[in-house]
Image (cartoon, rainbow, N blue to C red; front, side, top):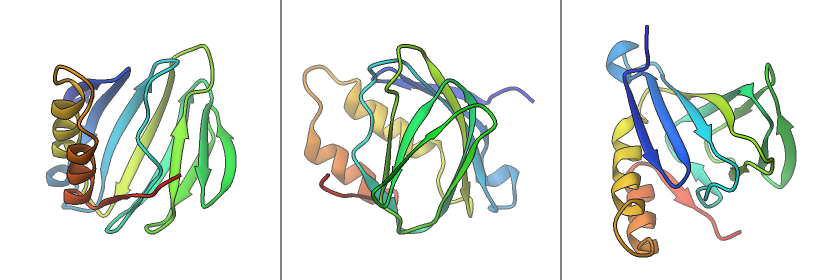
Length: 143
């Protein structure tokens, strides 16, 4: 099947593959495409779901609970709910990875809401970004 939709903001593309309705609410799956120098979300943790990352192209640098690791093609990483994490593209190339959220409570609405704040004219409203994150079960952590 082809990706259902592509959501673009701040040098990132989110390609939704599976939504909760496709998996009996068991998981959601999306591909992240991140340009070099893209602005990435603040360190955060998830209250209601676990996340698994699978590297497709390039090297993404993840930090999970203070431990930094590089995820390349074929590498994977499990991030349990409650684990503070963040990621970055520290390379000069575009990177890609798949993200699986389980159970399927994390859908494209989050990325649409984030894109509407990021893609608005002027600098992003940081209070609004935090509000969007919290409303979808992502808790930002000062880092």
